[in-house]
Length: 80
Image (cartoon, rainbow, N blue to C red; front, side, top):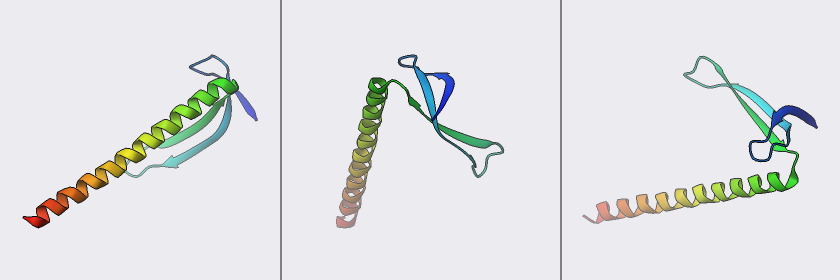
């Protein structure tokens, strides 16, 4: 467990560093670093996890609806 100096934007508690990954992205000169933190306040982190889960579910539903619209469009153009 690596507690950092950074503070949570929501509650002001300390953050724990979970992962840090640096990778090269094609067509970009600089490296991109993705860092994952967790809040030490369990209530706050629970709310964050809940919002992330809702966001993932929303985007999955949007992808399903988009695929249905694409199929319907293809079906309509094939009938003509």
